[in-house]
Length: 117
Image (tube, rainbow, N blue to C red):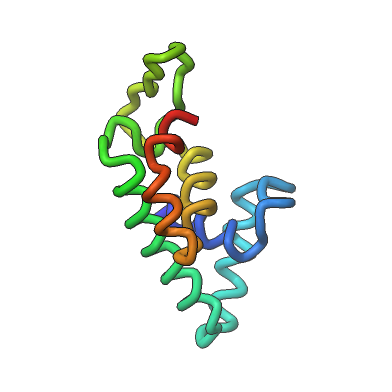
């Protein structure tokens, strides 16, 4: 639930002031707004963006050991940190960047470059 709330807060407020003053504050404000504006059309747009982003994340990062993990520079053999849980900042960045369905074809075609970046 926390990861989904983070995604929706980022989509609502944008990346510029995302962690200011805090993620907790953003989440509380978003929940208040959503409770007041139940029929907000943006929620459907954000949900479609989330669906697209998750689909692309599975295509671009097919190995679950790489998905939402921090890369460790190992030269030609880049590795990913092993972790039992998703790294929240990586989740935020990847899903925000992949949430534009119009970029799907280009991102899938260049997936290996994305993994290496």
